[in-house]
Image 1 (spheres, rainbow, N blue to C red):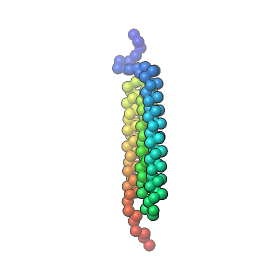
Image 2: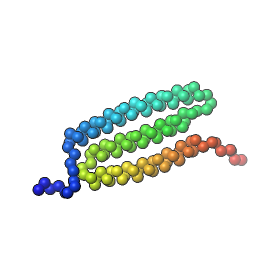
Image 3: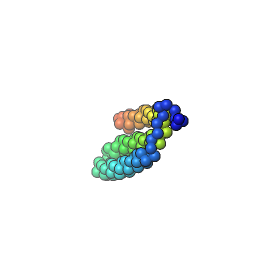
Image 4: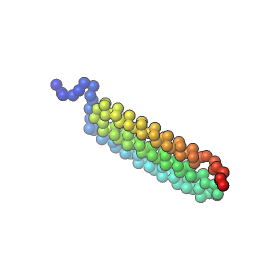
Length: 121
């Protein structure tokens, strides 16, 4: 007998290493994309005059960067999982964390997009 529990699976180390390198390459590509997006928002700010559309744009880029970073971390944890129970645990925690983050991000974007309320005396 192999000593493995029924339904358990092993991912070969070579596959883990390949998946880990792929995630890292994707992360680097995304970092380049975010840098370009940030430069674009800065250029928009420079030419916009008194209205600064970049504030919301910068916030949206920051949220995207946070969400993608969380997804890359999730992917790296998945490729290191040893069994299906660990995969399910990683999945559950990731989904819970992302739901909380998206709630907060939606709230912040709503506040940033809301028209300024009149000053009260």
